[in-house]
Image 1 (cartoon, one colour):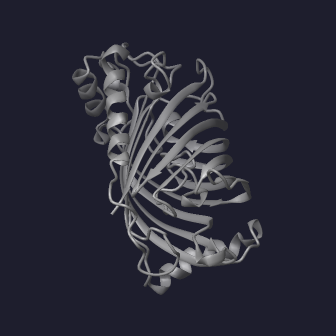
Image 2: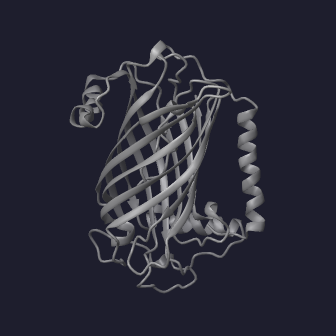
Length: 370
């Protein structure tokens, strides 16, 4: 959401510095696990995510994928998971075992609960009438339930954590249209920061229930030791694949990131808001402090995107989408005690025919373990 950078940039910097100060002040150190991997964090994790093109630079316009907001709670490790949960979360291991032949040691299973909202607007937000050659106004408000399985390398010495695979099932249920409160959230925030309101929300998509089921797998390959002294410096590659089915988004996606830093086994990359392929909403902690930088790509074959194709059961504004969409991304993550702060910078190819230029946006995530 745009604002005069002279107003908002100092406040953002202050907020990021404040989060960093809290981390450096030593939020409680990682709790000792009840059993299993030495030094690993087995508690619950709360993650707050904010995605906005403003983070990618003050020259950006508040357009297309305007804003994403999401809060997610991942449960502590389910030591006594019901048998049907074990069977369901083990299914991808049987079906996709050809991706990685290494033997998995300990398995952690968690469930997640999330709430999120994504807003989409055309480039011209001052025109009240329908702009036929630009994407529709749309808002998606949803609740999510997830099951996550992380598997660890059985060959790791001293029983220390070394995550090698992560599988996630995610079910999102919500609403598209005025009931998703996109107009209220965007324009009230714009009023708060003294920015122009978007005037075309009367043309947004109609109310429609939405449901999406997503499966994602991530795994670590190419692990290398670059330095042991004076600091431990490691690198790895994290490929990702995903498939989503539903009336909101239907797509197949694949990508990978390359990471360089310390304690890379803490996670599988920073989380993102779907339909992007996210990293890990949970994280482990081998040491009190860790960090990494990363860069990568993601490509999607899109069969349906309601924010471009329009309503499923009623006539509505729509545009001709591009079937193939790609992201280039780079960023960093820092761990301190039970906290993680991460930033991802994304460059996205055109999503629909006639779109004026590619999009850039930034994703800020803050996670804390309990």
